[in-house]
Length: 319
Image (tube, rainbow, N blue to C red):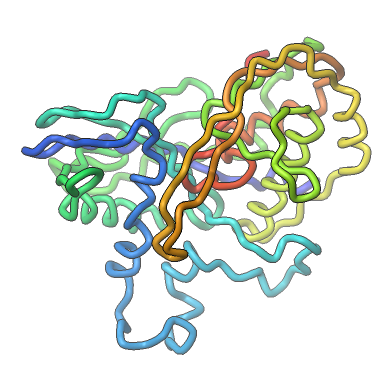
């Protein structure tokens, strides 16, 4: 078994409602939902606030430490180049560019949790309830968390996980596994399109690439899967990477309808603006695509490239 079958993830939709002052948000809302999330998470879970994290007795069992400062599993040799652990979550903003929301108007964003990160869902719900009190967007206007739903892989039918009217979390998670993805019939086609829904940052030799060549996409996909399985499933993804990337290099980019979209976010940690632009739009490929289908399907949930915690790197297949 390659290790891919052990992949576990869940996609959740958080439905929020604007408060009395409404909401004023930017066109791309990725950093808005991410901003303040880490500090609020720490406020909720930390019981030893006078101590430095590294000196805390709860350091190794701390939810904040695991979610934001994941350390490598002790029983697995970390491959070269994978020392920077990914977060076990993705905050996926709504694609609609609407910026103003009136009183009680609903807005939906998604949270994807992977591996052991799934066990920490109650903390995420608590954090977003608290963020609703603190406020969001321009003027830090309050909102309410209305409900959380979990989406099934096959039928897309949502199941209620949390309802504000009861304040209870229900065990209705629709877990998506690598094994389920492997069982999906692979399209008998030599052509598929990838829609880069949010800015996707592909690199080669540490340089940003403006063309979504298929081998670059697959390198990013394999890297993402490898790191998520390693750090959050204690599993090594064992695939013939050189052979697969060689095959990917023969897949032709026949239609490139992508463009570069600039985006800047302010980093309070670095006290500077960060350039986070990337590729958006659709690319169509032709060649032997069958070996890559399950990994691209997983990438639809896990995103690819840099900045995925802000919702960047969201791709969708169209076979």
